[in-house]
Length: 269
Image (cartoon, rainbow, N blue to C red; front, side, top):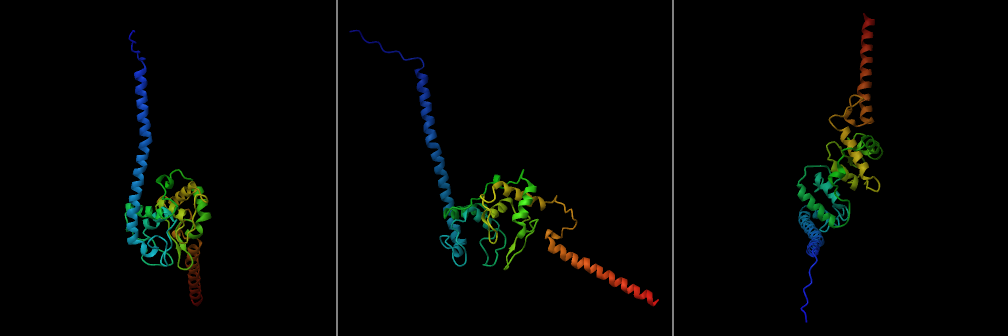
């Protein structure tokens, strides 16, 4: 019997094998690399929650309860979201010095990393508004005129038409918005702290929030002019009417007294 000759391999066989090997390697990378990244993200989030829980136990649990369920001294934090924590702690309102009609803004005692950890823990208690990204709060390119219309419609009743704040009932007040960061303004609209109503995206879309932020920054900026002259703090008709009453009417009375006095002297002479 004749020995069967070995079959020759096709010249492209080696190329095909190489391509298959590369495809298999790429498939394995695609299959496992994202999972590894997701696992790393989950681990980092778990560590942030654990650290946040430690901070919460020391600085927050006495008022809000060991599990965020709330007590007679503080409301429940279940479902308030990371945005509420970032606003309240990032502006120094929390931890509060003492209960009251309204918690004032004060010096911040946590750094941003600790605030993020606290926010991660509270967010793990229940879904709620998420801390916005920089792109969400950046007012660049926003419509200032539209923001002014939105602000006067939704905010001026409490914050005054230039955001200077004002008194409310029962010892509460709307704070001055000058110098407040865009992120904290956005979070306040998201979460509705204290007496303020909330404006979720379903009620006020992201772009409208950015328009309002742009308006606030513009009217309180260094380049903002007062076309009416003396702004009187931008507090509106109450301060303007008081100014007119005291100085305007007072000036007229003074002039009348001066005229009467000099008229009497003229008659005597």
